[in-house]
Image (cartoon, rainbow, N blue to C red; front, side, top):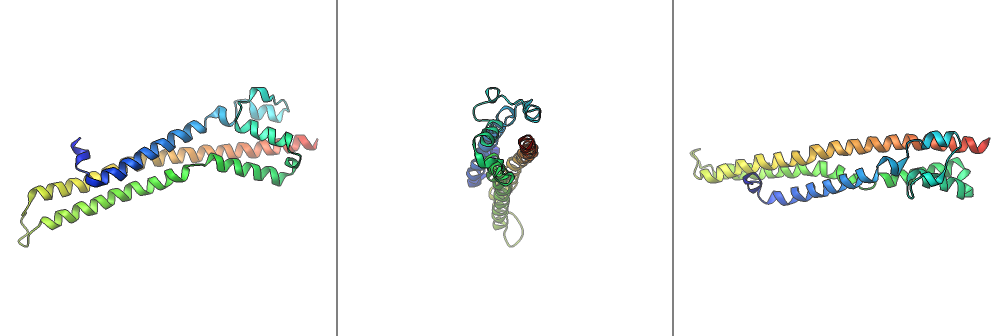
Length: 189
């Protein structure tokens, strides 16, 4: 608890960054579950032309893609289908900019706390270079180090989660490209 007390006013923006980052991470991990994107055998079923919409969950990406292709007469155009896929990828990326911003902001808030703490430390030094106020010196160093540590402790895991989610979306995008080709190929035959 002393660690948090020694971060001063910088604790509040860092807690906000942490809470927001955890929320967005959990929401995106939940939103990008496999059964919400593509069920296990969807791509094979699509390529074999054996898609059963009853086997697809109500709001899955696979179901939206198949329904769009089957119900919209203009969806047979490759450009329109690719535009639909780009909109879907935008939906998948929702909120990731927040994670990206937090991974940049949290260390900067920590750095600001470091600068503020060191400014307090150097403000306690007298002209004779002896400590005129050791309590202020110790609290300034603690503030400097603790805000840096806390900023990095927030940013590093969120950067890992962000990278994981971006990779998952890239793989989904590749699967969508394969699905488009499969749908268009089956439609031409």
